Image 1 (cartoon, rainbow, N blue to C red):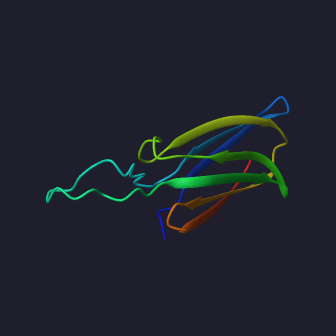
Image 2: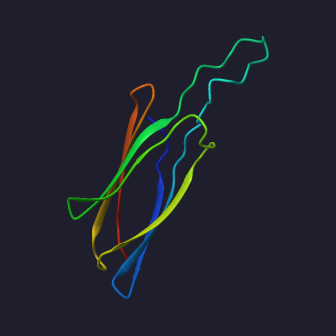
Length: 102
């Protein structure tokens, strides 16, 4: 399993600002190792963020996203909302982390 994501969420005026740092190597499938063999593609393919059980953000990533991707978005919400952030990568590995809006 991958390292935990860093999730920060703050509310101001009814708008929640969410910042997520995901730890993942995000291989494109185009690099080669020291022996000259192609490193297989391995990247986060889908991301889902739920607040209070409702989807607030969904994304589909591809091999062009950089290592340890950072994501920032806003939604209408409230202080105390429980956020659940989940991703699935191209090998089927999964990660889910939670945070509370401050």
